[in-house]
Image 1 (cartoon, rainbow, N blue to C red):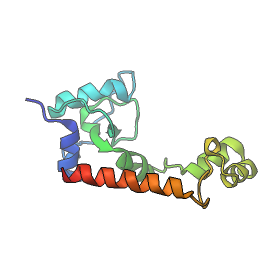
Image 2 (tube, helix red, strand yellow; image 1 turned 180 degrees about the vertical axis):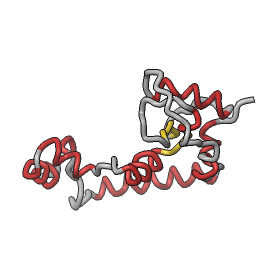
Image 3 (spheres, one colour; image 1 turned 135 degrees about the vertical axis):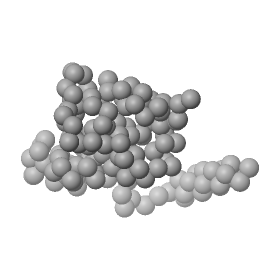
Length: 148
């Protein structure tokens, strides 16, 4: 019987999920990408193939590797932020914006409040009374649904 991958990630620490890793073994570059290798890891760990925020991470930092002893189930945060910082591959949203548009254009887009440009469209704008009532009603509905 397979273990649900999402539950596997939620109930085990990162260290427990990485206990099977053996990075002294060679990478297996059989072609494909992380999407193709999810089945390899699921079979190796006897888990389901996850959907949603549970993702396949490469402890070897080689996106083409399919060696299950280099792969583990991770959260977005673990893969992008923690492993990115460890391997020097993490790039913040600001750095991506500067690389794409240049610093002057990135500053302009960030400050003008343009949602499509990554700005803060509603930040600091006063809310109407009607809008405040709608927010309060939505919170009450959510709270009441939690208590049912």
